[in-house]
Amino acid sequence: MSTTAVPVGRPDQAAKGTPRRWPTAIWTLMAGTFLVRGLGFTYPFLPYHLTDLNLSTRSIGTFLAVFGAGWLLGSILSGWLADRIGHRTTLIAAMLLATAVLPLLAQVPTGPALFAATFTGGIVYDASRPVFTAAIAQTFPDDAVRATVNAWRHFAVNSGAAVAGTAGGMLAGPFGIRALIWTNAAACLLFALLVWRFIPANERRALGTAPPRSNYRAAVRDQGLWLLLAASLAALTCCASLFSSLPMLMADDGLQAADYGWTQTANAGAVLLLSPFLNHWLSRRAKHPMTGLFAVSSLVLGTSMGAAGFASTTLGYSAAAALAVPGEIVVFVAASDILNRISPPDARGLYAGIWGTTLAGAIIIAPTLAGWALTHGGDLLAAATTFAVGLLGAALCWPLAAFIRRTHPAPTRHRPEASPS
Image (cartoon, rainbow, N blue to C red):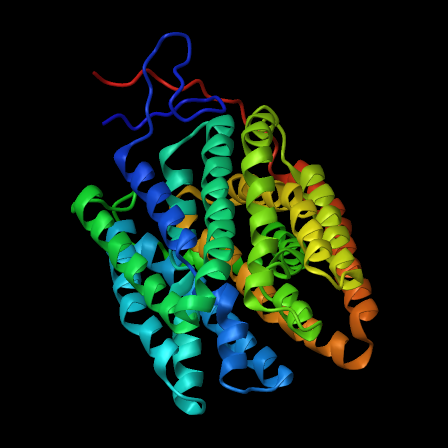
């Protein structure tokens, strides 16, 4: 199978009559990403599972933060392992661990066992993201092609998450939250089998050696990376509100898991409607760093999820979830574009794993911030803080753009070579 790609909006479209296809590994990662997100019921329904255990709002926020802390560690660990032992081995190990751990999270009672299961569940829940990010950067040298593949990858993530919310809301009543978490574990097992079957056993890092220690020191001193992390943390805190703060706000208004499922239906509809257009539009804007688009997406996320603080009905929350979709799509593609520009070629996984900590950090901050706001000022304070965080993410794009212009000038775009027959 070819290792070149199509530099256009559709993954199966040929350019100028030359057949080009994504490699099998990319299709496997794309399918597996949609699978574990489409059946990824654990995180979006974790607040309801914890509520069923009769935990207080403050305790629920704490456990969600613990899950996020595990997510943070898992992002760094999986990115580091992707560079060191390869994408295939890292993914199989992570998905098998998820298969074992998630059922424990569903069954253990409150106390230290639940704390440990929640933390470990966070480690494995999003372990595939930095591996996939590194694989895309390693496979596709052209900026426009990478933007296209990243856009479709995030379509798989966003649509899968929306499917999980919709299906989970419909299934939670008759089957219970525990059954949903068990289903999530089964999806992780299937993903591990797909990776074992379709990604070659001899897959290795592009340079064939372990990353040098200098990469870690360089990452710590990389000003551009730190600016990207700060901006991403702010923007993604707003994005994470869709799956953490939103169910907390809805539960505070007396709405049930089925009502939350309707918000995800609205989100899914907007994703399906807007993604094909935005994916093609974004791929045409990969010539320059997407810092401006990142700033706009942060404002969109802060405004839409801040508006959820004024909602009190399922319809109002659903509207907020739908309005957030353009920001969701653009922020991940723009962040991936910027990350690819500043990452050393032999440390793609490391940088992707470090960037993944921003999503984990957002998973920690969003419910903690929402819990604090609801306790001290109610829905209006929750709305104000969410908008302020989105505004901060947009403001940080200014020094980030200046840094990239100064130290990472836009490279000459490469034309993809013809696929070997």
